[in-house]
Structures are given as C-alpha cells and as structure tokens.
Image 1 (cartoon, rainbow, N blue to C red):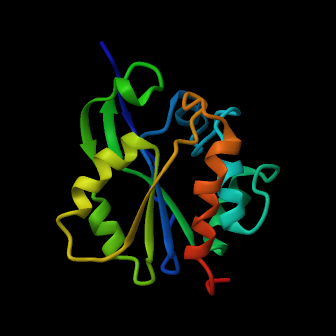
Image 2 (image 1 turned 90 degrees about the horizontal axis):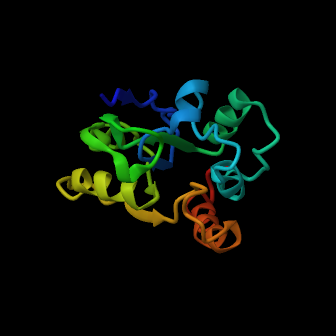
Length: 168
C-alpha cells in the first residue's frame, strides 16, 4: 500500500509579488521538512538570481527569510497524494491546494510561476477559473530528474527577476 504524502504550509507574507509553486515535496524534503532538500535539486541555485543573492550556502531558515525579503513566496499545488518514491509521474489520488484562494489573498501578487510541468498541469486548472490577471510562467523543473542541466534551465528562471523590479 502506498502511503499518502502531504505538502508543507505556504511560505508567504503580505508583500509577496511572485509565488513559486512546485508539485509535492519528494522523499528527502518530506523527511527533512524542508522545501527542496534533495542536494541534487537545483531550486535554490535557480531561484537565487530572482532573490538577488546566492541562497545555496544559507541555512534553510535563512533561505526562506531571503525569499520573503525578495517578495517571493513558495508553496505546492498538491496538498496530498499517494506516491511511491519521489517522481511526479507516480502521483495518484491528488488532493490540490486552493492556489486561487492563496493567490487572491496576496494583495501585491504579480506573477505565479510553476516549477515543472506537473505543477503547471495541476495548478493552472484552478487559475483559469479566476478573474485575476496574474502573469503565469511555466518553468523547467528544478528536479535532477529533468536532465537538461542547470545551464539550460537558468535563463527561464532568471526572467523571474524582472517581475520583482521595484520590489527591493
């Protein structure tokens, strides 16, 4: 029997202008209770340009504070699901988070970025029904399973910095 796995609370405050949404934390992240805890996941490296500083060497709590200071929020589109292992392809019986409600509660929100195709596929369904006009961005996944390499992913992720101009 596959155990049901649940996401973490959102990392947001009232000043968030960019909300980055993943799918569901993998095994390493769930065990550590940290977003993107797998050492080969490239998230912290890819989001660093938008945050305006290198987040990789920071302790986890400092990484989250740096994201919020840069007006970047973090959450997942999947609240819970059954999944053996960590791959998004194995997600079953998905219960979504209410992404639209969270986004509507953020008065300065300008954009929502999806970290990977699975996050986009599950999250965009909620946003098409809203009357809000956030910029929506589908990013290449930071997962090491998305093997195109960080150099090919980085230009798409660097575009996020433009959405935060004037926020710092």
